[in-house]
Length: 224
Image 1: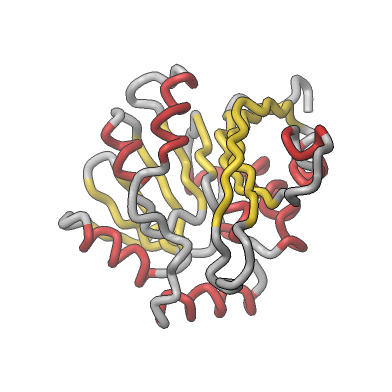
Image 2: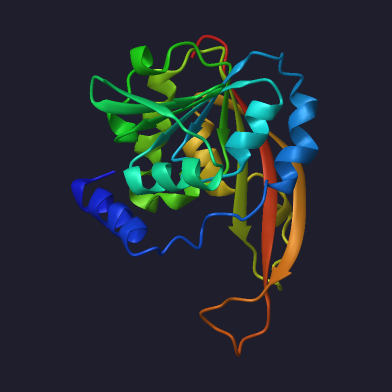
């Protein structure tokens, strides 16, 4: 993120404007994660993790979970809500909050290095990509590729807008943005699409809008 984006993100947490955080474990995670056949003890990286309960669920599956979050308010709230007493320590540019299988690095995602993360088996991206401004999403993907090994896979969940009168195959396929961000260096497998009509709280008088909830499995191309 730019310095301005970082300031805005931190301000959201200070002002408690955190409606994007789910109040329960993501149902698509519960449904499709077992199909990844990830071994117990595997290390899972969750970028821009916020206070997501998905962290707890992943740790309960026996994984070592490493999140990164810019806001110390968010991290403190997460551990308080879970009634956990984390240990904290300073490592380079990051303050590390740790409890059991959970570790959250407090700092800027774009300052992360491969040494900070260590070996990662799987990246779980539920809202990190879509939380970022569109003009820096390509930087997010490029940085992610630089800090994990080539064998690391990505489990990506997205929510994509779909116009009700759009009957093209593209609505139910890999979106152009995902192609533009990943296709040059990654294999993209779209494993699930779920169409849901939802009210827009900013436009309460308008009819529900259709969104596409999509599940992607992404892996590095051989030799890329």
